[in-house]
Structures are given as structure tokens and as C-alpha cells.
Image (cartoon, rainbow over the protein chains, first blue to last red):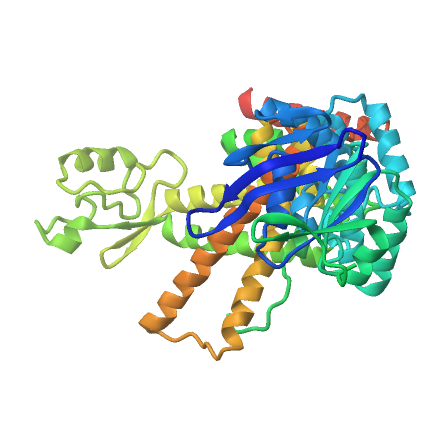
Length: 224
Length: 307
């Protein structure tokens, strides 16, 4: 890899208390345009790693570098959070506004965009995901599949360069998963996807790495 | 709560419970909210009978225009009327302390606070000041200072009038609120509050409550189900209390965790402590007749009351 990585973790360590160390000198890279599946057992620290990239958690040692800049303070991560969109495991955590349009608009409004432009972004984003006419729907009355797509829309509305997807297929049936695969494969962004759903990530990702014993290792050949 | 779990909180999100085509549900929510508060204030501050009566008539008219079904209105009113009935029974009641304590057997009409038929209010006041056990009844002032007694219980007309007046005012205010605000869903209400510059924190507290109440309710349902499938049946014993304690504790912990995740999700979308409202209400020609009529009503009430 000759290009500067979009995201890089160097010797990152993290633990949830002494009895639960999670990351033990973890090195990780995401190159531009790369689509990476992040595998690992339950509790191996996959979600932790994603949260660390956007600064929701801070490493006890080592450092996080995003878009060519070492990030240490909250202010450093503001820009990272705009450029790296994290899709949460539970869409109910992500959709907190009353209506779909307001939820999608939340990010762009926070970025200080004028209202007319925000409306345009909302309409465009929803259309690109096949969610035309969802704007006035009430977020909590959506089905699981719709919630997931709307959550993705809220992330895409920030126009990120990288997508971090945490178990995007949990609670989705086959048809909804199929739709998500189509949507994701049509997107230009680099992607890190955490998933236990092998048929799914094999259709999304071009590379796979595994988080084992607190370190990143190449996924065993049988995995891919 | 041994009923099977059912999501019961849909009323929070139900699009307006009334008929959406009715005139009042089309009026700008901000105007309706301001009107409801103004009406409530004026009626609450009013004295006498005329103002609450006019307000009640206007509120009934408003309810008719709001498209609420009579069934919904009656069901909501029932709760209020039960409280009012209690007030009507209790407020006129007083106790003849002399009769209870048997301090000194006084001739009828001279006991502390005893106001037998025909006794004038001024006499009462005189005897009250000498009494070691003042009667909690308001001193009679003109309108029916009389009353009657059963044993040591006193039943005063003043109290009765007061209770009736309170009932009239309460009904006028509640019906007015129902007509104006009762047809709004919680989301619209929250937004209207935002636009009226109610502190953001309060408005968002309402919106977040509406958004997550149902999720916690479902969480509660899941926990209850988990208890039930393992044979838990509530009894009056320590085990039950302990288990309920766990249930509430677990609910709190989970709610807290969820709130942390929500904050994280908000931060990921560049939230820095300030909310922006996306949609705006627009004052339209449809709102003009409402505002004009309401201002006239308010002016009439104020004139009657303060002139």
C-alpha cells in the first residue's frame, strides 16, 4: 500500500477494567477505497475498535491517525466524525428524532448548512436509498429493515469518506439484507464492516482481518 | 400486571386523535398553544360565575369544532369529574370542634364556627376569634353564609359554591385544552414549544421522552416476559419485592446504557450541544379567523371580569 491510509491505529491498547482487556497493541489500517471485513468472536473488541476510530473511546496507549492526522483531543475527532460515518449496531440508538427527515437532517444541520441545502440533502439521500416519501414517517414506527436503511441515510447525509458498519445485518431478514448489499455495493466509500454474517460480508468486502487476542491478524484463508 | 404484554403507548404517536379535517386541527399549533394557555390563565384568575360560564360555552364550541369524538371527550372528562365530585363532597365540609371535644356545651349558634340557619356571618367571626379550635370554614361573605349540620359535621353553602365554581372553571379549562391542544400529537406539541422559544431543554425532554418511552416499555415487556417464562408469579412476599427491585434496577441500568449510546450516536453526527429545528410552521390565512375569534373571546372575558 503506497497511498496514505485513511485510518490507522498504532499499538493501540484498551481495556474495560483490569479483568477485561480488549485491545493489546493493535495495529490496523484502512486504505482509500478498501472494503474491509473486521471479524472476531463476541467480545473480541470489534465495536470498541470502531468507537475508537471516531473518538468515542480513547486508547490507553498508542495512537489513532485519521485522514493523515494524529487525533488526540475531542476537537481533533470532530472532523473525523464528519468524514467517518459510524452505523450503530442498534438502529434505535441512532434514530432519535421524531421523523425520518429530521433525523437525516440532524447531521447536516449540526454542520451549519443552510436549511434549503439541508432539505436537498435529505431528499437526495433518501432517494438514493430508495426511501422516497419516507421523510414524514415517524422513526420508531419503521420496520427493522427500514430503520437500518434510515440509519444509513443519516450517516450518508454527512457525506462521509469512510463508512464504519457495526453488524449492519443484525435483525434483518433476507430481503432486507439483499437490499442493504445492493445499496452498499453502489456506494463509493471505503468501508469497514463488522459482521458475523459470512455470506453478507463476503459480498461487501474485498479483504478480511480478524481481531484475535487483542491484535489484528489476517483472516484465515478458510474465512474468506 | 399479569396481562400479556401489549405495546400500549401508541397514543403518544397517534396522529391527532381527532378528525384531521376539522377546522381547529388545521390551525397553526403555535396559535392554539398560546390560546390554550391564555384561556386557562384568564379563567383561573376570574371571579364570579359569568366568566367561567362564557369560557365553558366557548370551550364546548371549541370541542365541537376540534373534531374530537364525543366518546374520547367523555372518557377524558370522566377522570376530571371524579376529582371534582370529591371536591364537591369535601370542600363544604367542616367540623364542629366544640361538639367533638365537648369543651363547653354552647347554645346552638354560638359554638365555635357553628353557623346554624339564619345566623349572620359577623356573629360567626366574633365567636371564631374566641374559639380555641378555629373552624376551617371560610367566613361567610354574602352569598349564602348559611349551612346545615349533621352531628359534629358542618356543611356550608360557601364551600359548596366555591366547589361548584372550581368545578366550572376546571371544566372550562380542560375542555379548552382538549379542543386546542388535545388534537395535537406529541411531536407537533414539542415542535410548537420549540418555536415558541420554550427552553430547548424542556422541549427536547418532551421529544426524547416520546421517542424512547415506548422502547423502555418494550424493554420492560421483555424483562417481564423473561421472568414469566421461568415461572415467576407475583405474590405478597419478599421474593416478589426483590425480583421487582431487580426489574426496576435492570430497567434503569439499561436505560442509562441506552442514553449513553444515543449520546455517542449524536456526537458521531457532530452534535455539539445545540439542536436545530428543521421544519417550520407557517401562519396561514386559515389561522386568521381563529385568532380573531379567540382575541374577541379573551377581550370579552377580561372586560366582564375586570370592569
